[in-house]
Image (cartoon, rainbow, N blue to C red):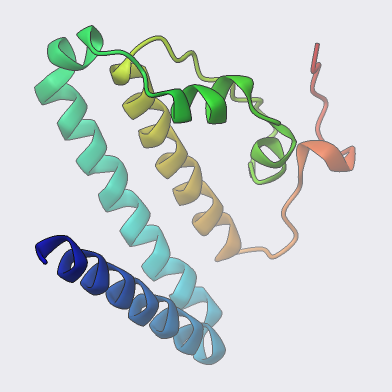
Length: 136
């Protein structure tokens, strides 16, 4: 079954990547974060290219319920907790284009996190009192 083979390969490649990153982190944490930054930058660029090439079609398609649940209706505490800047992000999700924009922006936030972790390991959080954010 082709689907089984695809899932099997994807899961095992992901585990292999995880093992590589853990081993690299034990040897040199900065290089592990740098490699993750490269992966996240590539993902953001890929999403950005896809958005530019397919904007018209994506804007006509509805957003999946899973994306609405995650970005709009979900508990945003953990979403905020893992942001490395003091900006509150609340993506507007009205169609599939908006979903891909939000995912691309997530990847860009991951890039910022990886950059920060290469220079300092004390990352602030919106919830730790270091950020002046008006939640309401």
